[in-house]
Image 1 (cartoon, rainbow, N blue to C red):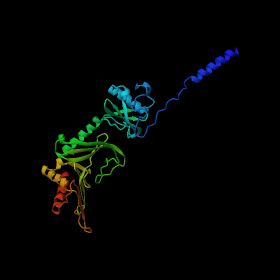
Image 2: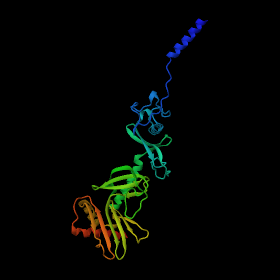
Image 3: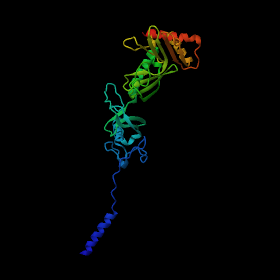
Image 4: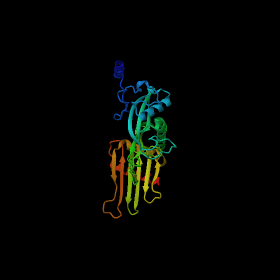
Length: 337
């Protein structure tokens, strides 16, 4: 009996020793810098033949799995044909994950998450997610950008009295402006010092480039290529006037005696074709011009008059032409009011 008992014990021990050992569950791999997935899966396919987007794979983060699942539904392609190009950790500025849709309100709170770029069928797609992938938003680069671009193109063409069809888009880049003025300093205008997400759109017309700064929702469009500033302060009448002119044709005026303060019109409203032509010639030929026609210091009821012009050329303004530039700015200001 003892002999048979030892045979059973020995057989059990040999079977246990030869059996494969259980492996610890594979952990989710951390993000490697600003890109993912890990190089151990160069084709970004699910391991162990698991190609179902409904079953998250162990080599991808939940956010990446969610983005892949969303794109699989959109394109109708199986998940094993979707490649993760890059993943970047981002703090989205609002509850819409930085993707503004017309007519959609967003909670104004920072949401940690990821910007994920996927590739499928030879095309790349951008998705924004929160950290755990429970929120996934596709960035339709065409729909949002094109809508804003069209409005900016329309504004530029209208300002200059030209055709929108002649305007082309040089660049359209997402940025974070340092203030509520979209990074454009204006005379006599205070700006809230709050980071404001938006875009910088550069347009080109007749060989000249024009820069615009736009808020994320497209509700605020601010010209950014400064052309001229003019100020007049003091004198017996107590002047306190300022003029800011942008290359794209927007004209802003401030007058402390006006109510409400601040007026805006465009070249199309204020200048004749010949006057716009004279301005364009100055822009093309002149470099920066700084003029000061103020009364001498110490004079009673002294009036200060200063003008700065920002041209794209290298020529220096001749002395006889200084009066014409002053007259052009003063006339523009008078027409504005």
